[in-house]
Image 1 (cartoon, rainbow, N blue to C red):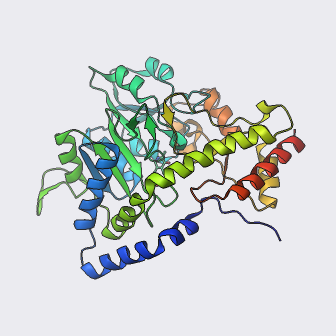
Image 2 (image 1 turned 180 degrees about the horizontal axis):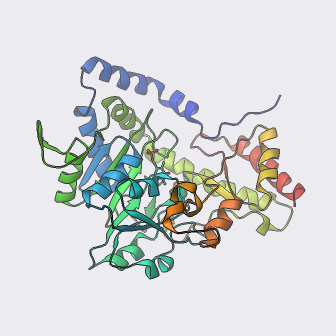
Image 3 (image 1 turned 180 degrees about the vertical axis):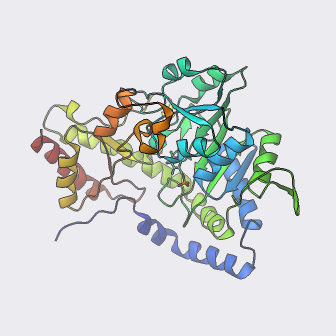
Length: 377
Ligand SMILES: *Cc1c(COP(=O)(O)O)cnc(C)c1O
């Protein structure tokens, strides 16, 4: 019988906390408090405590977290926002949605995160913000970006949608001298059972603004100071997150172990030249939560096909860099402009990853991967 390995094992996670989760959700159902309310307030305290920030504002998704950040900074038509093309579409989508222009800078070939040296030459008087993404759960070089914008009017926003729980020299992602935006999409390191997200800040004014903007710009009942959105989190999702957050430290420890085990096992098992499989690079001092365990191989499609045939799902995060997506054709970029992003997007491939991945399933994946890479060389 063939094995079928889940890509992000949400089912095992649910089974592990089933009693607590079922009770928490049913309690909300019986409470008649479905939008905001005590579960949401409790979650916001828990989230802020976790990363050490003064505020955590829960919102309806990671995309809305990013949108609200740009709205809070009054970024609009005529403005430019610099970001990475090697990310999920939402990072750039919100820039365009507020009417501003996404300006893409290339990534670092080892970390896959936005390269501060590539950003520097793109800064001009229209630059209003920079959005580095802490991709695959590895914190971006937020300190370097902070040095770059310090003393200017340029705002810094961390797209931490994949990196809640990650650490850089003792400091938690979402709390790096910037607005931190995360996502609780089910398969993210901390996921709910629908859409959800949060914005983190240490600034009283920013917190007040985001809290108002997510609730139709309201400052008191039916008194609207700003033009906002419906960007609130619902209580069922908050209750799920409160349960999962209590287990999160253990899950993160498991993810980190599974991530580093993958690398060690691949290096030990591969019979060819080890440079055929590029494993994740985690710089000194940084801790990745492995939102994805992504490797690079030359013949990706063939390798993926062989793995899929053996019940091992794979994914590509992301196959087309944003600067050459059709929807950004008007931004003035063409193929060849950002060569590292373009090269990496042709080679990158994510393997099954979750805190519940079993060691023998991981051995099976590694063995199949090493064989497939060797055979397709
Ligand atoms: C998931 C993700 C988002 C969007 O989050 P949603 O909650 O799905 O809206 C934004 N940026 C990155 C890098 C993501 O991975």
